[in-house]
Length: 76
Image (cartoon, rainbow, N blue to C red; front, side):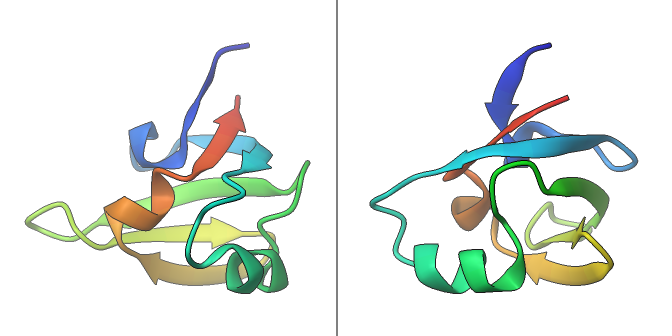
């Protein structure tokens, strides 16, 4: 099981959150939205130019910037 950042997942891929960068500027908000250790996340689709990315965490779908996804480590 390979660990990588959430922005490295392709549409249709799913993984589980391992950690959230403690220096991430949106850390508190992302935790409130459900990006906690063990949460299942998947990439739904990318915008035509690649940014933002629509992700699903638990049953919630969100559009986040690629820069924000780089601070979320996941494992398949």
